[in-house]
Image (tube, rainbow, N blue to C red; front, side, top):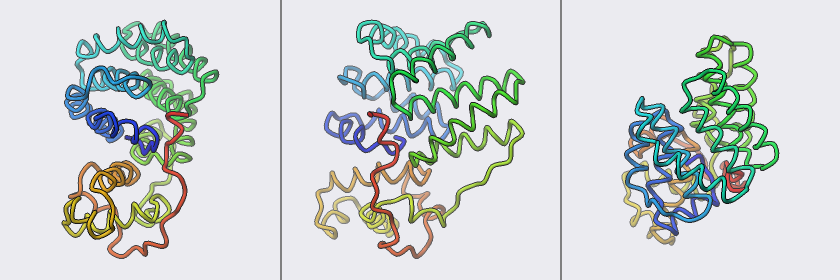
Length: 268
Protein backbone atom coordinates (compact mmCIF):
# COMPACT_ATOMS: atom_id res chain seq x y z
CA UNK A 1 0.00 0.00 0.00
CA UNK A 2 1.08 3.53 -0.53
CA UNK A 3 -0.39 4.61 2.80
CA UNK A 4 -3.96 4.91 1.53
CA UNK A 5 -6.12 5.00 4.67
CA UNK A 6 -9.50 4.42 3.04
CA UNK A 7 -8.26 1.64 0.84
CA UNK A 8 -6.51 0.01 3.81
CA UNK A 9 -9.82 -0.09 5.66
CA UNK A 10 -11.57 -1.59 2.65
CA UNK A 11 -8.89 -4.19 2.07
CA UNK A 12 -8.82 -5.19 5.72
CA UNK A 13 -12.59 -5.57 5.82
CA UNK A 14 -12.65 -7.59 2.61
CA UNK A 15 -9.65 -9.79 3.36
CA UNK A 16 -7.58 -7.99 0.73
CA UNK A 17 -4.22 -8.13 2.51
CA UNK A 18 -2.67 -9.71 -0.60
CA UNK A 19 -3.74 -6.69 -2.63
CA UNK A 20 -2.20 -4.33 -0.10
CA UNK A 21 1.09 -6.20 0.13
CA UNK A 22 1.23 -6.43 -3.64
CA UNK A 23 0.95 -2.67 -3.98
CA UNK A 24 3.60 -2.15 -1.31
CA UNK A 25 5.98 -4.56 -3.08
CA UNK A 26 5.43 -2.66 -6.32
CA UNK A 27 6.32 0.62 -4.65
CA UNK A 28 9.48 -0.96 -3.26
CA UNK A 29 10.50 -2.21 -6.71
CA UNK A 30 9.86 -5.91 -6.02
CA UNK A 31 7.58 -7.00 -8.87
CA UNK A 32 8.07 -10.74 -8.37
CA UNK A 33 7.00 -10.38 -4.74
CA UNK A 34 4.08 -8.24 -5.86
CA UNK A 35 2.92 -10.94 -8.27
CA UNK A 36 3.04 -13.53 -5.51
CA UNK A 37 0.96 -11.38 -3.16
CA UNK A 38 -1.52 -10.44 -5.87
CA UNK A 39 -1.88 -14.07 -6.93
CA UNK A 40 -2.97 -14.88 -3.39
CA UNK A 41 -5.39 -11.96 -3.28
CA UNK A 42 -9.12 -12.48 -3.60
CA UNK A 43 -9.86 -12.21 -7.33
CA UNK A 44 -13.41 -10.91 -7.00
CA UNK A 45 -12.97 -8.06 -4.52
CA UNK A 46 -15.72 -5.61 -5.49
CA UNK A 47 -15.33 -1.96 -6.35
CA UNK A 48 -12.21 0.17 -6.83
CA UNK A 49 -9.90 -1.90 -4.56
CA UNK A 50 -10.36 -4.98 -6.73
CA UNK A 51 -10.07 -3.01 -9.96
CA UNK A 52 -6.88 -1.31 -8.84
CA UNK A 53 -5.45 -4.69 -7.86
CA UNK A 54 -5.94 -5.78 -11.48
CA UNK A 55 -3.86 -2.78 -12.60
CA UNK A 56 -1.22 -3.62 -10.00
CA UNK A 57 -1.08 -7.17 -11.38
CA UNK A 58 -0.47 -5.93 -14.92
CA UNK A 59 2.29 -3.58 -13.79
CA UNK A 60 3.94 -6.27 -11.68
CA UNK A 61 3.82 -8.78 -14.54
CA UNK A 62 5.44 -6.35 -16.98
CA UNK A 63 8.09 -5.24 -14.48
CA UNK A 64 8.91 -8.88 -13.71
CA UNK A 65 9.41 -9.58 -17.41
CA UNK A 66 6.36 -11.83 -17.55
CA UNK A 67 3.74 -9.76 -19.39
CA UNK A 68 1.58 -12.79 -20.20
CA UNK A 69 1.00 -13.20 -16.45
CA UNK A 70 -0.98 -9.98 -16.58
CA UNK A 71 -3.11 -10.83 -19.62
CA UNK A 72 -6.18 -12.00 -17.69
CA UNK A 73 -6.01 -9.01 -15.34
CA UNK A 74 -5.74 -6.68 -18.35
CA UNK A 75 -8.82 -8.17 -20.00
CA UNK A 76 -10.86 -7.83 -16.80
CA UNK A 77 -9.62 -4.29 -16.23
CA UNK A 78 -10.58 -3.19 -19.73
CA UNK A 79 -14.00 -4.81 -19.38
CA UNK A 80 -14.60 -2.91 -16.13
CA UNK A 81 -13.47 0.37 -17.69
CA UNK A 82 -15.83 -0.09 -20.64
CA UNK A 83 -18.81 -0.93 -18.45
CA UNK A 84 -18.21 1.54 -15.62
CA UNK A 85 -17.60 4.71 -17.59
CA UNK A 86 -15.36 6.18 -14.86
CA UNK A 87 -12.52 8.41 -16.13
CA UNK A 88 -10.16 7.10 -13.45
CA UNK A 89 -10.75 3.53 -14.63
CA UNK A 90 -10.13 4.59 -18.24
CA UNK A 91 -6.87 6.19 -17.12
CA UNK A 92 -5.66 3.12 -15.26
CA UNK A 93 -6.63 0.82 -18.14
CA UNK A 94 -4.84 3.01 -20.70
CA UNK A 95 -1.75 3.09 -18.50
CA UNK A 96 -1.68 -0.69 -18.34
CA UNK A 97 -2.26 -1.00 -22.08
CA UNK A 98 0.75 1.29 -22.62
CA UNK A 99 2.88 -1.03 -20.49
CA UNK A 100 1.86 -4.06 -22.55
CA UNK A 101 2.26 -2.39 -25.95
CA UNK A 102 5.48 -3.10 -27.85
CA UNK A 103 5.01 -0.40 -30.48
CA UNK A 104 6.52 2.88 -29.19
CA UNK A 105 4.00 5.14 -30.93
CA UNK A 106 1.08 3.13 -29.56
CA UNK A 107 2.58 3.04 -26.07
CA UNK A 108 2.97 6.82 -26.08
CA UNK A 109 -0.58 7.25 -27.34
CA UNK A 110 -1.94 5.13 -24.50
CA UNK A 111 0.09 7.03 -21.90
CA UNK A 112 -1.30 10.31 -23.25
CA UNK A 113 -4.84 8.90 -23.18
CA UNK A 114 -4.27 7.81 -19.59
CA UNK A 115 -3.19 11.28 -18.48
CA UNK A 116 -6.12 12.88 -20.27
CA UNK A 117 -8.51 10.55 -18.44
CA UNK A 118 -6.80 11.22 -15.10
CA UNK A 119 -7.35 14.94 -15.56
CA UNK A 120 -11.08 14.27 -15.69
CA UNK A 121 -11.28 11.60 -13.02
CA UNK A 122 -9.29 12.73 -10.00
CA UNK A 123 -7.35 10.08 -8.02
CA UNK A 124 -4.02 11.94 -7.78
CA UNK A 125 -2.12 8.84 -6.65
CA UNK A 126 -3.11 6.93 -9.78
CA UNK A 127 -2.24 9.90 -11.99
CA UNK A 128 1.16 10.12 -10.29
CA UNK A 129 1.75 6.43 -10.95
CA UNK A 130 0.98 7.03 -14.62
CA UNK A 131 3.37 10.00 -14.69
CA UNK A 132 6.04 7.80 -13.08
CA UNK A 133 5.62 4.94 -15.53
CA UNK A 134 5.48 7.34 -18.47
CA UNK A 135 8.64 9.02 -17.22
CA UNK A 136 10.40 5.68 -16.85
CA UNK A 137 9.38 4.77 -20.39
CA UNK A 138 10.60 8.11 -21.76
CA UNK A 139 13.94 7.73 -19.98
CA UNK A 140 14.43 4.27 -21.45
CA UNK A 141 13.58 5.80 -24.83
CA UNK A 142 16.43 8.31 -24.24
CA UNK A 143 14.06 11.27 -24.08
CA UNK A 144 15.52 12.48 -20.84
CA UNK A 145 14.18 16.04 -20.77
CA UNK A 146 10.61 14.84 -21.28
CA UNK A 147 11.19 12.07 -18.77
CA UNK A 148 12.29 14.54 -16.10
CA UNK A 149 9.11 16.57 -16.50
CA UNK A 150 6.92 13.51 -15.96
CA UNK A 151 9.00 12.17 -13.11
CA UNK A 152 9.06 15.52 -11.31
CA UNK A 153 5.26 15.74 -11.59
CA UNK A 154 5.00 12.24 -10.09
CA UNK A 155 7.44 13.03 -7.29
CA UNK A 156 5.58 16.19 -6.30
CA UNK A 157 2.34 14.24 -5.82
CA UNK A 158 3.96 11.30 -4.05
CA UNK A 159 5.66 13.68 -1.61
CA UNK A 160 2.41 15.56 -0.99
CA UNK A 161 0.60 12.28 -0.29
CA UNK A 162 3.41 10.88 1.85
CA UNK A 163 3.77 7.86 -0.45
CA UNK A 164 7.35 7.18 0.61
CA UNK A 165 8.30 4.10 -1.47
CA UNK A 166 6.84 5.68 -4.59
CA UNK A 167 8.59 8.99 -3.94
CA UNK A 168 11.91 7.17 -3.54
CA UNK A 169 11.31 5.32 -6.79
CA UNK A 170 10.60 8.62 -8.56
CA UNK A 171 13.75 10.17 -7.09
CA UNK A 172 15.82 7.24 -8.34
CA UNK A 173 14.40 7.64 -11.83
CA UNK A 174 15.03 11.39 -11.76
CA UNK A 175 18.66 10.80 -10.82
CA UNK A 176 18.96 8.29 -13.67
CA UNK A 177 17.48 10.93 -15.99
CA UNK A 178 20.17 13.40 -14.96
CA UNK A 179 18.42 15.51 -12.32
CA UNK A 180 19.71 15.91 -8.79
CA UNK A 181 17.12 15.39 -6.05
CA UNK A 182 17.23 15.42 -2.30
CA UNK A 183 16.87 12.19 -0.36
CA UNK A 184 14.77 11.55 2.71
CA UNK A 185 16.18 10.14 5.92
CA UNK A 186 15.33 9.03 9.47
CA UNK A 187 14.96 12.64 10.62
CA UNK A 188 11.82 12.88 8.48
CA UNK A 189 10.09 10.02 10.33
CA UNK A 190 8.19 12.06 12.96
CA UNK A 191 6.39 14.04 10.28
CA UNK A 192 5.39 10.93 8.36
CA UNK A 193 3.66 8.97 11.11
CA UNK A 194 0.69 9.76 13.29
CA UNK A 195 1.20 9.51 17.04
CA UNK A 196 -0.64 6.17 17.13
CA UNK A 197 1.43 4.78 14.27
CA UNK A 198 4.64 5.82 15.99
CA UNK A 199 3.58 4.11 19.22
CA UNK A 200 2.85 0.89 17.36
CA UNK A 201 6.10 1.05 15.38
CA UNK A 202 8.23 1.68 18.47
CA UNK A 203 6.68 -1.33 20.21
CA UNK A 204 7.10 -3.46 17.09
CA UNK A 205 10.80 -2.58 17.15
CA UNK A 206 11.06 -4.20 20.59
CA UNK A 207 9.93 -7.53 19.13
CA UNK A 208 6.42 -7.37 20.57
CA UNK A 209 3.75 -9.28 18.65
CA UNK A 210 0.62 -7.60 17.37
CA UNK A 211 -1.39 -9.05 20.25
CA UNK A 212 1.18 -7.87 22.79
CA UNK A 213 1.14 -4.38 21.29
CA UNK A 214 -2.65 -4.44 21.33
CA UNK A 215 -2.71 -5.31 25.01
CA UNK A 216 -0.18 -2.60 25.83
CA UNK A 217 -2.06 0.12 23.93
CA UNK A 218 -5.56 -1.21 24.63
CA UNK A 219 -6.32 -1.67 20.96
CA UNK A 220 -7.57 -4.64 18.96
CA UNK A 221 -4.89 -6.70 17.24
CA UNK A 222 -6.56 -5.85 13.92
CA UNK A 223 -6.11 -2.15 14.63
CA UNK A 224 -2.43 -2.76 15.38
CA UNK A 225 -2.03 -4.59 12.07
CA UNK A 226 -3.80 -1.73 10.32
CA UNK A 227 -1.43 0.86 11.81
CA UNK A 228 1.59 -1.20 10.73
CA UNK A 229 0.18 -1.53 7.21
CA UNK A 230 -0.12 2.27 7.14
CA UNK A 231 3.31 2.89 8.66
CA UNK A 232 5.41 0.49 6.56
CA UNK A 233 4.82 2.26 3.22
CA UNK A 234 5.42 5.67 4.79
CA UNK A 235 8.78 4.41 6.06
CA UNK A 236 9.64 2.53 2.87
CA UNK A 237 9.96 -0.84 4.60
CA UNK A 238 8.35 -4.21 4.00
CA UNK A 239 8.98 -5.93 7.35
CA UNK A 240 9.65 -5.30 11.03
CA UNK A 241 13.28 -6.31 10.56
CA UNK A 242 13.85 -3.19 8.45
CA UNK A 243 12.43 -0.73 10.97
CA UNK A 244 15.72 -0.19 12.83
CA UNK A 245 17.33 1.12 9.63
CA UNK A 246 14.62 3.72 9.10
CA UNK A 247 13.39 4.81 12.54
CA UNK A 248 15.69 6.75 14.92
CA UNK A 249 16.47 5.05 18.21
CA UNK A 250 14.59 7.72 20.11
CA UNK A 251 11.69 9.57 18.52
CA UNK A 252 9.28 11.31 20.89
CA UNK A 253 5.80 10.01 20.20
CA UNK A 254 4.43 13.51 20.52
CA UNK A 255 6.58 14.61 17.58
CA UNK A 256 4.61 12.47 15.16
CA UNK A 257 2.07 14.26 13.06
CA UNK A 258 -1.60 13.86 13.71
CA UNK A 259 -2.57 14.41 10.09
CA UNK A 260 -4.52 12.09 7.86
CA UNK A 261 -2.89 9.04 6.40
CA UNK A 262 -0.77 9.63 3.35
CA UNK A 263 -2.07 8.75 -0.04
CA UNK A 264 -5.74 8.80 0.92
CA UNK A 265 -6.41 10.32 -2.47
CA UNK A 266 -6.17 6.92 -4.09
CA UNK A 267 -9.83 6.49 -3.30
CA UNK A 268 -10.76 10.15 -3.65
